[in-house]
Amino acid sequence: MPSLILRTMAPLVFALSLPVSFFILIQGHNNPGGGFVGGLVAAAGVIFYALGRGRDAATDLLRVPPATLCGVGILLAVASGVPGLLGAGFLTHDWWAPAYGLGTALIFDTGVYLTVVGTASAIFLALIRS
Image (cartoon, rainbow, N blue to C red; front, side):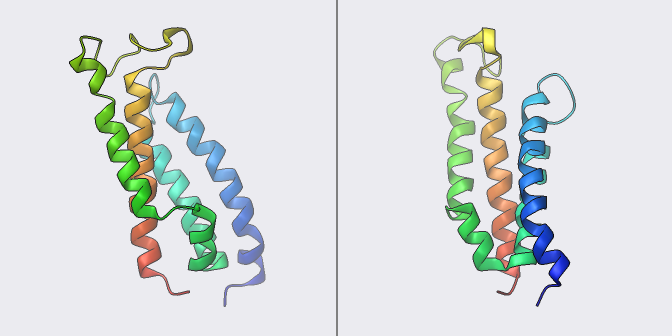
């Protein structure tokens, strides 16, 4: 049974890890970071939550199975190449809402983010006891 401090801090650490991971995801276009590092930070929050509250609570927190996150992330990363096939720039900001910085690079990074969160969570949740 985890300590009272770990059980109490687990939701707070998870709640802090998500905004930080989103920030790292978004800033990755111009600075170090991106989908992989952001996904690792989010997965670390899920793992800390699982350590404090148990595997079942972490699975409920995710709301979808981690393998589904992996699949959606891979499909999103592959889908980011479709505009390149249609003549638009590949992994650029040239094709969709360039004023907001939204393009294939952000879609690709989001796919990587979801894949990393799903993979790291699935591996750890498979190893942890309830």
